Length: 306
Image (cartoon, rainbow, N blue to C red; front, side):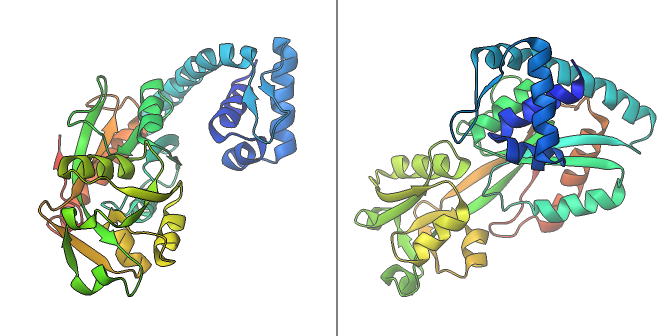
Protein backbone atom coordinates (compact mmCIF):
# COMPACT_ATOMS: atom_id res chain seq x y z
CA UNK A 1 0.00 0.00 0.00
CA UNK A 2 1.54 3.28 -1.16
CA UNK A 3 1.05 6.76 0.27
CA UNK A 4 0.14 7.94 -3.22
CA UNK A 5 -2.76 5.47 -3.29
CA UNK A 6 -3.98 6.65 0.12
CA UNK A 7 -3.76 10.28 -1.01
CA UNK A 8 -5.84 9.44 -4.08
CA UNK A 9 -8.35 7.60 -1.86
CA UNK A 10 -8.65 10.66 0.41
CA UNK A 11 -8.99 12.96 -2.61
CA UNK A 12 -12.06 11.01 -3.78
CA UNK A 13 -13.50 11.16 -0.24
CA UNK A 14 -12.94 14.93 0.03
CA UNK A 15 -13.99 15.87 -3.51
CA UNK A 16 -16.94 13.47 -3.85
CA UNK A 17 -16.06 12.13 -7.31
CA UNK A 18 -13.17 10.66 -9.25
CA UNK A 19 -13.30 13.52 -11.76
CA UNK A 20 -13.00 16.24 -9.11
CA UNK A 21 -10.35 14.24 -7.24
CA UNK A 22 -8.23 13.92 -10.38
CA UNK A 23 -8.42 17.69 -10.90
CA UNK A 24 -7.39 18.30 -7.30
CA UNK A 25 -4.44 15.89 -7.60
CA UNK A 26 -3.44 17.29 -11.02
CA UNK A 27 -3.52 13.91 -12.76
CA UNK A 28 -5.77 12.35 -15.40
CA UNK A 29 -8.85 10.57 -14.11
CA UNK A 30 -7.83 7.19 -15.53
CA UNK A 31 -4.57 7.26 -13.57
CA UNK A 32 -6.36 8.13 -10.32
CA UNK A 33 -9.01 5.44 -10.91
CA UNK A 34 -6.27 2.87 -11.55
CA UNK A 35 -4.47 3.91 -8.37
CA UNK A 36 -7.64 3.43 -6.29
CA UNK A 37 -8.42 0.13 -8.01
CA UNK A 38 -4.92 -1.14 -7.21
CA UNK A 39 -5.44 -0.15 -3.56
CA UNK A 40 -8.77 -2.00 -3.48
CA UNK A 41 -7.13 -5.07 -5.06
CA UNK A 42 -4.36 -5.01 -2.47
CA UNK A 43 -6.83 -4.66 0.41
CA UNK A 44 -9.24 -7.20 -1.05
CA UNK A 45 -12.38 -5.04 -0.84
CA UNK A 46 -14.19 -2.27 -2.71
CA UNK A 47 -13.72 1.08 -1.00
CA UNK A 48 -16.37 3.02 -2.93
CA UNK A 49 -19.88 2.35 -4.17
CA UNK A 50 -19.74 3.66 -7.75
CA UNK A 51 -23.37 2.94 -8.67
CA UNK A 52 -24.73 6.48 -8.22
CA UNK A 53 -23.76 9.85 -9.65
CA UNK A 54 -21.70 10.58 -6.52
CA UNK A 55 -19.40 7.90 -5.14
CA UNK A 56 -19.91 6.94 -1.51
CA UNK A 57 -17.77 4.93 0.89
CA UNK A 58 -18.47 1.27 1.45
CA UNK A 59 -18.14 -0.25 4.92
CA UNK A 60 -14.55 -1.18 4.02
CA UNK A 61 -13.91 2.39 2.89
CA UNK A 62 -15.27 3.80 6.14
CA UNK A 63 -13.00 1.44 8.08
CA UNK A 64 -9.97 2.60 6.10
CA UNK A 65 -10.75 6.33 6.41
CA UNK A 66 -9.33 7.04 9.93
CA UNK A 67 -6.27 4.87 9.24
CA UNK A 68 -5.61 6.66 5.95
CA UNK A 69 -5.89 10.03 7.68
CA UNK A 70 -3.42 8.97 10.36
CA UNK A 71 -0.90 7.54 7.89
CA UNK A 72 -1.04 10.61 5.64
CA UNK A 73 -0.72 12.91 8.63
CA UNK A 74 2.42 11.00 9.64
CA UNK A 75 3.80 11.27 6.11
CA UNK A 76 3.06 14.98 6.08
CA UNK A 77 4.92 15.39 9.37
CA UNK A 78 7.97 13.71 7.83
CA UNK A 79 7.82 15.97 4.78
CA UNK A 80 7.42 19.00 7.02
CA UNK A 81 10.58 18.07 8.92
CA UNK A 82 12.48 17.84 5.65
CA UNK A 83 11.03 21.19 4.54
CA UNK A 84 12.24 22.80 7.76
CA UNK A 85 15.78 21.51 7.14
CA UNK A 86 15.59 22.71 3.54
CA UNK A 87 14.66 26.21 4.69
CA UNK A 88 11.20 26.10 3.07
CA UNK A 89 12.63 25.52 -0.38
CA UNK A 90 10.02 22.79 -0.75
CA UNK A 91 6.89 21.85 1.16
CA UNK A 92 3.13 22.03 1.23
CA UNK A 93 0.59 23.95 3.28
CA UNK A 94 -3.17 23.44 3.28
CA UNK A 95 -5.65 26.18 4.16
CA UNK A 96 -9.43 26.14 4.32
CA UNK A 97 -11.81 29.04 3.95
CA UNK A 98 -15.45 29.94 4.20
CA UNK A 99 -16.84 30.76 0.78
CA UNK A 100 -17.84 34.33 1.67
CA UNK A 101 -14.48 35.47 3.05
CA UNK A 102 -13.98 39.20 2.32
CA UNK A 103 -11.92 40.59 5.21
CA UNK A 104 -8.83 39.05 3.62
CA UNK A 105 -8.08 39.13 -0.12
CA UNK A 106 -6.98 35.51 -0.09
CA UNK A 107 -5.95 35.24 -3.78
CA UNK A 108 -3.79 38.35 -3.49
CA UNK A 109 -2.25 37.19 -0.22
CA UNK A 110 -1.47 33.74 -1.62
CA UNK A 111 0.08 35.33 -4.70
CA UNK A 112 2.36 37.35 -2.42
CA UNK A 113 3.16 34.24 -0.41
CA UNK A 114 4.05 32.37 -3.61
CA UNK A 115 6.45 35.13 -4.61
CA UNK A 116 8.20 34.80 -1.25
CA UNK A 117 8.18 30.98 -1.22
CA UNK A 118 7.92 29.73 -4.82
CA UNK A 119 8.82 26.17 -3.82
CA UNK A 120 5.85 25.75 -1.49
CA UNK A 121 2.62 24.23 -2.77
CA UNK A 122 -0.58 25.70 -1.31
CA UNK A 123 -3.78 23.65 -1.19
CA UNK A 124 -7.03 25.62 -0.68
CA UNK A 125 -10.41 24.14 0.28
CA UNK A 126 -13.70 25.94 0.83
CA UNK A 127 -16.35 24.28 2.98
CA UNK A 128 -18.79 24.87 5.81
CA UNK A 129 -17.51 25.91 9.24
CA UNK A 130 -18.22 22.45 10.68
CA UNK A 131 -16.36 20.74 7.83
CA UNK A 132 -13.38 23.09 8.14
CA UNK A 133 -13.26 22.57 11.90
CA UNK A 134 -13.29 18.79 11.51
CA UNK A 135 -10.59 18.96 8.83
CA UNK A 136 -8.39 21.04 11.14
CA UNK A 137 -8.83 18.56 13.98
CA UNK A 138 -8.11 15.61 11.67
CA UNK A 139 -4.91 17.23 10.43
CA UNK A 140 -6.18 17.52 6.85
CA UNK A 141 -5.82 21.32 7.02
CA UNK A 142 -3.03 23.34 8.58
CA UNK A 143 -5.09 26.54 8.82
CA UNK A 144 -8.62 27.71 8.11
CA UNK A 145 -10.62 30.92 7.99
CA UNK A 146 -13.81 30.19 9.93
CA UNK A 147 -16.73 32.20 11.28
CA UNK A 148 -17.47 30.35 14.53
CA UNK A 149 -20.96 30.34 16.00
CA UNK A 150 -19.71 30.55 19.57
CA UNK A 151 -17.46 33.24 20.99
CA UNK A 152 -14.67 30.71 21.59
CA UNK A 153 -13.27 28.21 19.12
CA UNK A 154 -13.86 24.50 19.76
CA UNK A 155 -11.43 22.85 22.15
CA UNK A 156 -8.07 22.08 20.59
CA UNK A 157 -8.13 24.94 18.07
CA UNK A 158 -6.24 28.22 18.34
CA UNK A 159 -7.04 31.65 16.87
CA UNK A 160 -4.00 33.19 15.18
CA UNK A 161 -5.91 36.39 14.30
CA UNK A 162 -9.47 37.72 14.13
CA UNK A 163 -11.26 40.18 11.86
CA UNK A 164 -14.64 41.87 11.86
CA UNK A 165 -16.84 42.00 8.74
CA UNK A 166 -19.75 44.40 8.38
CA UNK A 167 -22.95 42.81 7.04
CA UNK A 168 -25.35 44.77 4.85
CA UNK A 169 -28.68 43.99 3.22
CA UNK A 170 -28.52 43.67 -0.56
CA UNK A 171 -31.61 44.19 -2.68
CA UNK A 172 -32.58 44.22 -6.32
CA UNK A 173 -32.07 47.57 -8.10
CA UNK A 174 -35.14 49.73 -7.66
CA UNK A 175 -36.25 48.05 -4.44
CA UNK A 176 -37.88 50.54 -2.02
CA UNK A 177 -35.24 49.81 0.62
CA UNK A 178 -32.48 50.73 -1.85
CA UNK A 179 -33.81 54.27 -2.05
CA UNK A 180 -33.65 54.71 1.72
CA UNK A 181 -30.09 53.37 2.01
CA UNK A 182 -30.65 52.20 5.60
CA UNK A 183 -33.27 50.33 7.58
CA UNK A 184 -34.06 48.75 10.92
CA UNK A 185 -34.18 45.00 11.49
CA UNK A 186 -37.77 45.21 12.66
CA UNK A 187 -38.81 46.74 9.32
CA UNK A 188 -37.80 43.58 7.43
CA UNK A 189 -40.55 41.32 8.77
CA UNK A 190 -42.46 41.29 5.47
CA UNK A 191 -39.43 40.90 3.22
CA UNK A 192 -38.68 37.57 1.46
CA UNK A 193 -35.09 36.40 1.97
CA UNK A 194 -32.52 34.45 -0.01
CA UNK A 195 -30.22 32.58 2.35
CA UNK A 196 -27.17 30.34 2.40
CA UNK A 197 -27.49 26.68 3.36
CA UNK A 198 -27.38 25.89 7.06
CA UNK A 199 -23.93 25.47 8.57
CA UNK A 200 -22.10 28.09 6.55
CA UNK A 201 -20.43 30.97 8.37
CA UNK A 202 -22.73 33.54 6.79
CA UNK A 203 -25.94 31.64 7.51
CA UNK A 204 -24.89 31.22 11.14
CA UNK A 205 -24.21 34.94 11.59
CA UNK A 206 -27.49 35.94 9.92
CA UNK A 207 -29.53 33.40 11.86
CA UNK A 208 -28.01 34.64 15.13
CA UNK A 209 -28.72 38.27 14.19
CA UNK A 210 -32.34 37.52 13.30
CA UNK A 211 -32.91 35.60 16.52
CA UNK A 212 -31.36 38.39 18.59
CA UNK A 213 -33.67 40.95 17.01
CA UNK A 214 -36.80 38.75 17.00
CA UNK A 215 -36.96 38.72 13.19
CA UNK A 216 -38.81 35.70 11.81
CA UNK A 217 -37.50 35.63 8.27
CA UNK A 218 -39.50 34.23 5.35
CA UNK A 219 -36.89 32.38 3.29
CA UNK A 220 -37.97 31.88 -0.31
CA UNK A 221 -34.76 30.23 -1.53
CA UNK A 222 -31.57 28.82 0.00
CA UNK A 223 -28.40 28.20 -2.00
CA UNK A 224 -24.86 26.85 -1.70
CA UNK A 225 -22.99 29.36 -3.91
CA UNK A 226 -22.58 33.08 -3.25
CA UNK A 227 -22.75 33.89 -6.97
CA UNK A 228 -26.19 32.29 -7.23
CA UNK A 229 -27.38 34.08 -4.08
CA UNK A 230 -26.38 37.43 -5.60
CA UNK A 231 -28.07 36.60 -8.91
CA UNK A 232 -31.31 35.62 -7.17
CA UNK A 233 -31.34 38.88 -5.23
CA UNK A 234 -30.67 40.78 -8.45
CA UNK A 235 -33.64 38.98 -10.04
CA UNK A 236 -35.91 40.16 -7.22
CA UNK A 237 -36.63 36.84 -5.51
CA UNK A 238 -35.65 38.27 -2.14
CA UNK A 239 -33.15 40.28 -0.13
CA UNK A 240 -30.09 38.91 1.66
CA UNK A 241 -27.51 39.75 4.29
CA UNK A 242 -23.94 39.59 2.96
CA UNK A 243 -20.55 41.14 3.79
CA UNK A 244 -20.42 44.66 2.34
CA UNK A 245 -17.62 43.81 -0.10
CA UNK A 246 -19.74 41.13 -1.79
CA UNK A 247 -22.63 43.52 -2.35
CA UNK A 248 -20.34 46.25 -3.66
CA UNK A 249 -18.55 43.89 -6.06
CA UNK A 250 -21.92 42.73 -7.37
CA UNK A 251 -23.03 46.31 -7.98
CA UNK A 252 -26.22 45.82 -5.95
CA UNK A 253 -27.72 48.34 -3.51
CA UNK A 254 -26.17 47.89 -0.06
CA UNK A 255 -28.63 48.90 2.63
CA UNK A 256 -27.04 49.69 5.98
CA UNK A 257 -28.73 48.14 9.01
CA UNK A 258 -29.23 50.29 12.10
CA UNK A 259 -29.94 49.15 15.63
CA UNK A 260 -28.02 46.93 15.83
CA UNK A 261 -25.31 47.24 13.17
CA UNK A 262 -24.76 43.63 12.08
CA UNK A 263 -21.40 41.98 11.63
CA UNK A 264 -19.56 38.72 12.08
CA UNK A 265 -16.19 37.62 13.40
CA UNK A 266 -13.81 35.72 11.14
CA UNK A 267 -10.94 33.77 12.68
CA UNK A 268 -7.74 32.37 11.19
CA UNK A 269 -7.57 29.11 13.14
CA UNK A 270 -5.07 26.31 13.58
CA UNK A 271 -4.49 23.32 15.84
CA UNK A 272 -2.19 25.14 18.25
CA UNK A 273 -0.34 28.39 18.96
CA UNK A 274 2.52 27.26 16.69
CA UNK A 275 1.81 25.06 13.63
CA UNK A 276 4.05 22.02 13.36
CA UNK A 277 4.32 22.55 9.61
CA UNK A 278 7.02 25.19 8.91
CA UNK A 279 5.20 26.21 5.73
CA UNK A 280 2.08 26.91 7.81
CA UNK A 281 4.15 29.00 10.21
CA UNK A 282 5.36 31.08 7.25
CA UNK A 283 1.79 31.45 5.92
CA UNK A 284 0.43 32.54 9.32
CA UNK A 285 3.16 35.16 9.53
CA UNK A 286 2.41 36.37 6.00
CA UNK A 287 -1.35 36.62 6.56
CA UNK A 288 -1.06 38.42 9.90
CA UNK A 289 1.90 40.70 9.06
CA UNK A 290 0.14 42.07 5.97
CA UNK A 291 -3.12 42.76 7.82
CA UNK A 292 -2.53 46.12 9.57
CA UNK A 293 -2.38 48.06 6.29
CA UNK A 294 -6.13 47.58 5.85
CA UNK A 295 -7.12 48.02 9.48
CA UNK A 296 -9.84 50.49 10.31
CA UNK A 297 -11.78 50.30 7.05
CA UNK A 298 -15.50 49.70 7.35
CA UNK A 299 -16.10 46.11 6.39
CA UNK A 300 -12.35 45.60 5.92
CA UNK A 301 -9.70 43.99 8.05
CA UNK A 302 -9.57 44.73 11.73
CA UNK A 303 -7.18 42.00 12.87
CA UNK A 304 -6.36 41.12 16.41
CA UNK A 305 -3.47 38.74 16.79
CA UNK A 306 -3.92 36.04 19.41
